[in-house]
Length: 489
Image (cartoon, rainbow, N blue to C red; front, side, top):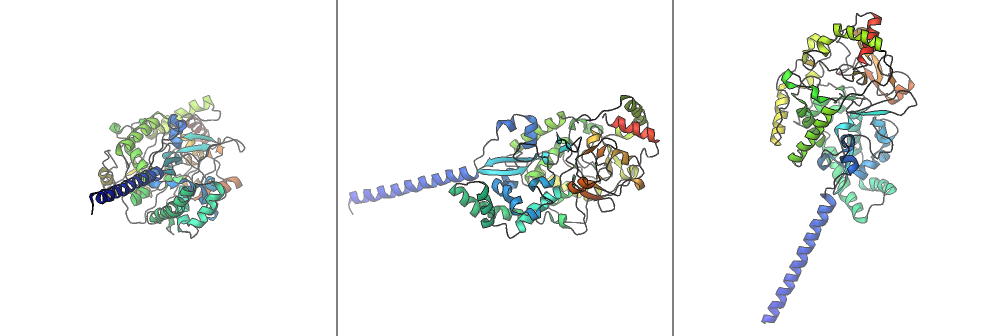
């Protein structure tokens, strides 16, 4: 073999190797671009604090995100899985006019467009002052119209359905958008099968939502500690069931751990930072991609929530009657709701309300959840590793917008809360956002309330309306004055 022939072969081999390297590099760049390239959200979201809270990403798109076009067509393919007509609006989400997605749904490109949830989905209140008025949306307020359990079940039920397959979904996607040839292939052969697989993997964690002995949570309620139990520490399903009202999260700076204040309804968290971290981890569904980015987002969120304030009551208030009501409040309510006891745990024996929420959680679960977060490399004071004794005596700022009342949302209005438990409504409709300024709460009866709401039955597990029988012996005029004062808080 001549030297010339040897050199020629080497040149061919080097050329082939070079081409191979270039093809591999191009493939890597293409793969990064299509699956991992992270695009910042637009300035109209990131530069406005309220928009950032409502639509800004907290990083959940990485592991919990759903490809945008799959998310878009699910209600079109599976209308029979929805709680009613109207697509995603049927879940009672807060949806501002002109917005592409509901409040609390964030879209971000990480290779491809993905949709995930944020804290705002559960913590944006809405109310209407008249039947024909547009809703007023209040970020950091409780979303009492949201049917969160129905949304969770919708995703699982869609994935279990044989129609969740590429031919069916691609046919619907092609009706609403023109994907490029390669994006169409990616959706057909990768994103649709992977999304189905990931949703089905959540079946076990969501099993208690299908428990035959448990009623629906209903609109505006969330079985939060069972979510933590089954998702963060992945315990097997037990018989506990304790849905609570969606809480307001404005003005979190009022909680001061050094004064013995506790967070969450049953006082199972030490401070606001821990609550924000744990809530965000629940939405992520996995360890953060980068802890420093995650904690920076937590710090921003915490600053925002500390600065947020409850909105003013939107109807006229009688100043004279409210002044009389303050005297009634000071004599009958302030010892728990405007004193050193406020924000601390009151034993359940003292208040007499349902134990169901307390019984969903214990010190062993708290210790395991704290260990999981520590393993992620995240430092926080964490969940309280001690038995739960009762419920936190609530601060009352914005109490007018926090109906229904008690920790489990079992009493529809403030007027009803001042009645003996035996005289409170046994059933009522939750989730209608027309405000009732007379009783101070939402309208809970009538055909529209029934159409838009979910039936709350206080006789069912997790829904008891017993306890907190304070002020029930006041004269009618004293109750009216007290309610007038509560409107001012």
